[in-house]
Length: 94
Image 1 (tube, one colour):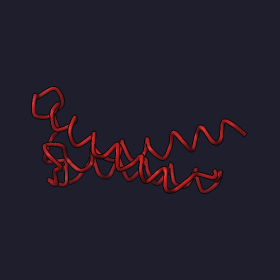
Image 2 (cartoon, rainbow, N blue to C red):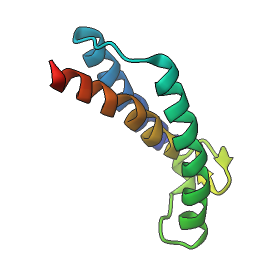
Image 3 (cartoon, rainbow, N blue to C red):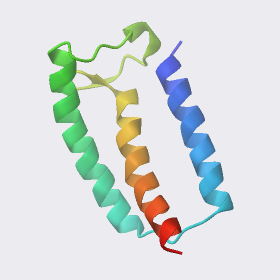
Image 4 (cartoon, one colour):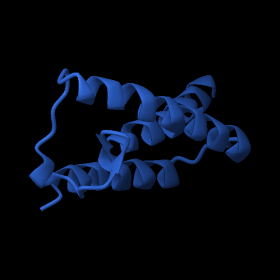
C-alpha cells in the first residue's frame, strides 16, 4: 500500500478544503513558477540525500515511481510549500 501517498493526499485535501473556505488571491503564474523551481531542486537534492543514505524510505510504502532517487511522493512537500506559504502570507496581510 502506498502509505506515503495516502498521507500526502490526506494533508492536501485538508489544505484544499481550508483554502476553499478562506480564499486568498494568489497569482497562479508565480505559484506555478515557484512549484517548477522547487520540484527541480527537490529532484536534485532529495536524490543526493537518498543516494547517500541520509534519508531512507520504506519503498513498499511508495508508488515505486522515482524522480532521480526520490520517490514521487516526496515532491508533495515542495508543492504544498509553494502554495501554502504564499497563501498564509496573503491571509496574514489582511
